[in-house]
Image (cartoon, rainbow, N blue to C red; front, side):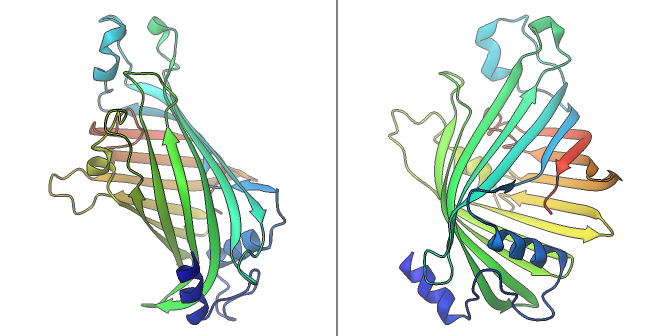
Length: 284
């Protein structure tokens, strides 16, 4: 952490709440500055909060075979995400370095499957803690606005043989320019005891980084997420979404997912999903 702090200071570190320059007044910059100025223990959205009605190409039936041949999954289900964060401490390193706690929960609900009592097929829980630094670097026409460094745990809270989990150390580099934002998030998995690891090959499918592109056009937000882009086995994970205004703060969302790892039980299963629904909070 000391090395990161020194590097940021040498590169023109900014104090929390300050703007990098008069031209850094894009919509993403304003959101970053608002978060940096927030008081501790006030909640804000970590990621979009939404609910979707979805249809997938084929459900991953294999993990549930032990429940019986008649327990067949539907292609249609409801997907929803809840995600929030709160600042725990301000300015841990001089006038910069805020400590945050975040939590994300994603659920896949077989709401229309009355034959098996409409169960929650999969729910993933993702608590994380990270330190966020504001920066002032210029990189190929973009402004590196924040660097986050932290630890994240993700699991589905299930017993064997359905249990899936992993822990990672990550960095998140967030760059902006006007209505465009880019996030590059590499990670390193924290090794587990091989005898207790229920998904030892998860990095081969979910990769070792995530790239996300965001663009705001007249209140319409377009997002693209990519993982495992250069994988030789073509185990790409991709998500495209479009959110748009409906009424006041209510927004619509169309989301398309293609590839592996949409959730932990499907980390090594290739699926395609299209969903439409509503957003309660967006990236902004």
